[in-house]
Image 1 (cartoon, rainbow, N blue to C red):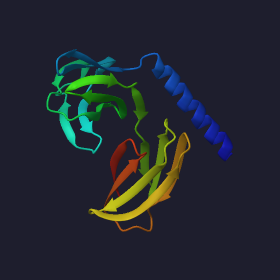
Image 2: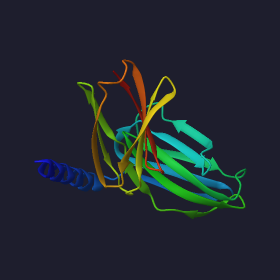
Image 3: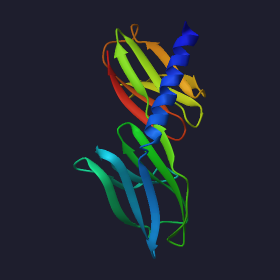
Length: 195
């Protein structure tokens, strides 16, 4: 029975990916002049979006959140003051992320990497059980950290499988708010559980 449920879940995820593949949102980064680049996002329906430019050290160099849902977004960013190196241009919307790595040399974009798409985890908390599903496209090692009032409670290794599904029993934990952080070494996802 467990194998049957897993196969149904895997088929559902593949179907969801193939259906969304026909309407895949795009994120382009195009060098336009001197030290500037056009960052362009297009989607088939309006959605609230967040754009972030980060250094590989995790330093946020630029952040913008749309005030209203948009189908497309155009930004001109100036990279004049950035050091040589690699940076991430990331767009988040509807529990979905598109990331493009760029290389800067002498204040100019010299390379734009392929778009990497990732779905955020799905979670449900019911009857003291936390159910987590995560489509691990990159098959990286996935960890889940649980915190209560800023203090680390535990770390769970979720594995490297493409389709991760886990259930965690919270019945023996104290009542309160728990901050959950799920990471695959490339993306960090956070959500809150109230027990």
